Image (cartoon, rainbow, N blue to C red; front, side):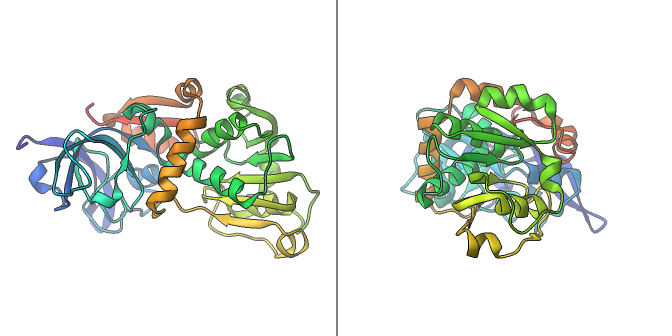
Length: 331
C-alpha cells in the first residue's frame, strides 16, 4: 500500500486550475473512513469542463478529478462496510469539494457509498454512472408525479445522444412509454432508435425563442439542456404534465413565463443527483437493475484508458461524445 499510483489532478497553475497527471500514495489521500480500490470511473460533462479548463469545477485545489467511481473496499473504520464489499459512488461533491475517482485508490466517507447491485459489474455500473443514475432519478420522479403513462402522450428526452438522454430513452422505452428524442445530430438517429426512440425533434427548433404557450404535445419530458430549450419544452407540455430538469448544457438561464404552470398545471421537477439521499439513490439503481437493457448498455458505453482523459475532455465539451465513456483507471 506504500506504492505510488497515477491520478488525474486539478492543480493551481499561476492562479488558474490546470489538469495534470500526478503520482500519489495512499498516505496522501484524505483521512476518510473507507479505502476503496477503484476499478473504473466515468467521463461526465463536468469532468470535461474541469480537465479542459473550460469550467471552474474544483472549488479547492489540488483536487483529484472524477465524479464517479466503482471498486472494492480495501480497509474500513466504518461498521457499515467491510473489506471485499463492492461499491459505487456518484456525486457527493467528488471532484468539486472532495477528491474523486480518477485514481487507483481513494478514501471516502461511509455515507457516500452505495452497494453495487448484483445485476451489474463495475464496468457496467460506470457505463451507467452519474448520467444514467440521474436519468433513473428523472424517470422515477415523473412516475411519482403521475404525469406520464405507458401508451399515453409522448415523453420527450432532450440531449438525447448524451449519457443522461441515452439512458432515459432506454429506461422509458423498456417501461412502455412512447419516446421522442431531441437531437441535433441526424447520424445518431439509428442509435437512438435502437434504444427505443420512435420519433425525433431537431434540437435547433427547441433552441429558438418560442411562445409562452405552444401546441400541447408532451406528457412529460427529461431535460438535460436548460435555457431556451427547457422554456420551449415547458410551453409544449400537455395539461397536467411534468418536466424533470437535471442539466444546463445549453445554459443556466430559463427565459420562461408562469403560463404553462398556472394555465396547464405543468410542473417543473428539479432533479439533483449530487446530494440525493440514500433512499432515492437505492431506488434509482433498482430501477436501472430492473429495467435497463444490458445489451443496450453495451451500445451506450465504451471503455477508454485514463491516459486519454485530456483528449476525451475536449470531445465531450464540444458535444462530440455519443453515449457514455467508462474510464479504466489502471491504464
